[in-house]
Image (cartoon, rainbow, N blue to C red):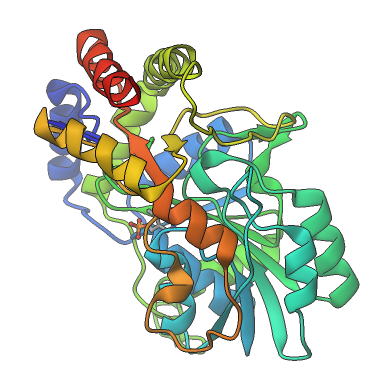
Length: 359
Ligand SMILES: *Cc1c(COP(=O)(O)O)cnc(C)c1O
């Protein structure tokens, strides 16, 4: 069976040696040694100023909204994973969907501006499939209307934009380190900001607001990462260059083999690097996509309909506007299997099954 992704498992002996360390010092959560080591190493690798590890990517978003004291309406994309809009609703905020660009599949800045009202407090764009948003236009719009920007950068681990980390854009960028992601800590995530005060506030918020032995400031939540997860992260980070290289090879091969077919690929932001996190393909029609899906499933190969359905169609209310671009993309897209362990023979099989459907 070949799935869309497969969790990267590092060397077991190395992980064991970290677990031995955890046993030696008996500290298994609450800003342990390994978590602190991972925070420093990740901030260094990603070239970001403040990086706070948290329990998962969804809580990273929720804490970001709280830290920025968002209110009312939040403009976001309908073409993403359910956590992007779900986290907004969970925080008592109102997601206002704005349609995506038909080629980049990221938020279209023109539509963002049209969706702004006096109730809007922030924009939550997604660098979907690691493709950098039009960060300059988004920044200009946010400045003009005095809005905060939280990038859901769950797919954008390690992506650079014009010579610096893409994660440096926005008031906050969030990452997910779920087992299915490019870099993972089993479950986990991170909050990234250039603002030291905001980073301080986030650290308070993720630990119930506790700031000292006998001191609690305001209120918070429990969004802490534990030492076992940090140990996994340290092991995976050691192998990150190999992971990226293997993914690139698979990504390039798909591109080379499939470009002869009449299918659409994501238009990538040329000022940004590629982290090869997904390989999405867009078919001409839903029927054709289903044909390909069925043919692959018959060979025990399971691509995923990322992202389907368009989030504005969920039971969130407020469906004044038709997100026609998002609906169109969501109904015709498939993400093909891509992970370091995928063998070239397996990839060849996937490609030949797809080509047969087109014959
Ligand atoms: C994975 C993902 C999340 C959620 O992250 P978790 O760590 O699973 O909570 C949020 N947004 C996007 C776009 C994602 O792909």
